Length: 201
Image 1: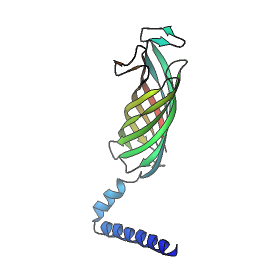
Image 2: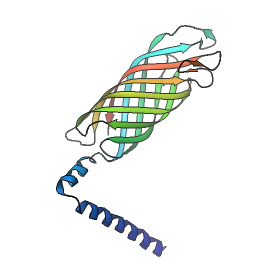
Image 3: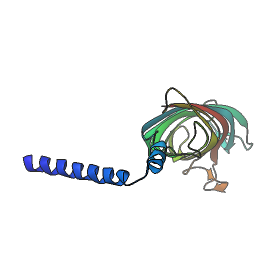
């Protein structure tokens, strides 16, 4: 056990020395740029609220009630994501949420999340893509794409608020339609176009 501990310490010290040598070999401008690109690095969490129009494409609603139209409703969702910010531009993580697809049907999306800050500035455009699976009254493949603006706090460097326009889609892979392809006689799909506000910490 003692030998293993000594070996681990030696590896850590050598890696640290190698990194220090590389940084020491850079000029001050390059070091400053490297530091400036990694001020957000580390654990990152998000909480967001979305509200918007939901399009339902059903051949049945509830207890076998026929409905061949595509009614539009108002949906609300709450999502939280947690993961790792690799630098000031790229985040990768996973999350879960509660989403109201109709007035009576609720889904719980479980997803992977990739987020990109376009600029290394306090105020920057941001792109967010989520993909996974939803369980609940509506279940199936889940996809969400958002674009918006991130506004970082001056005092809390790693915290920010953001506003995004979002398009999300749930396709029932057992009984429904995905991207307008019918798999069975019964169709069930949920599309949402919403506005999201969130907090990043």
